[in-house]
Image (cartoon, rainbow, N blue to C red):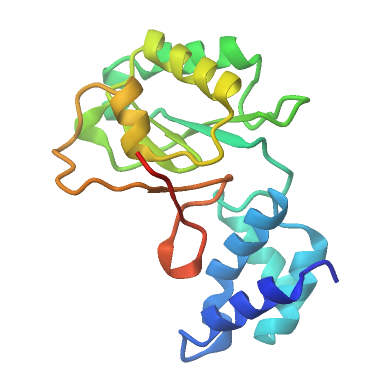
Length: 205
């Protein structure tokens, strides 16, 4: 097994938060994805043993939900919303800008494993449309020009952490609402930054 003791200990801490072990399946899949950039067969076996369900049951959940990836992603997962509010506000031009820069079609990853691109349904930022997520960190009010600048910045700077507040300040426009509390936590891979399961990291902004 490729899970080291530290990761197994973290997994057991998460399991302890739930009355039934199997209820921890979702967070454990995120741990697996943060480790490898996708849900590997080895991780499916490990999680199966940890929560006491079959490998098929683990695989069925991992393959059903689109936020769990079955193939390795790039360091930066670019999720561009295409739902109605974003569509009305010209998300198609943002999508085209990102696709042209990365050279990727939907669900593709570049050879250098820098970017993975996907068109997604509503990400809950309708008031700040068009909206994009980078490793599930949201930036609102993007224009095609700003989305291009953001991709260039990611490729050149290769930030270890992606933080929504920083993205919004550098590249965003109109927001759904005022983000009253400054948040310097973010994500280091294609996994949402959840503080309670340890996938969030902090950055000095």
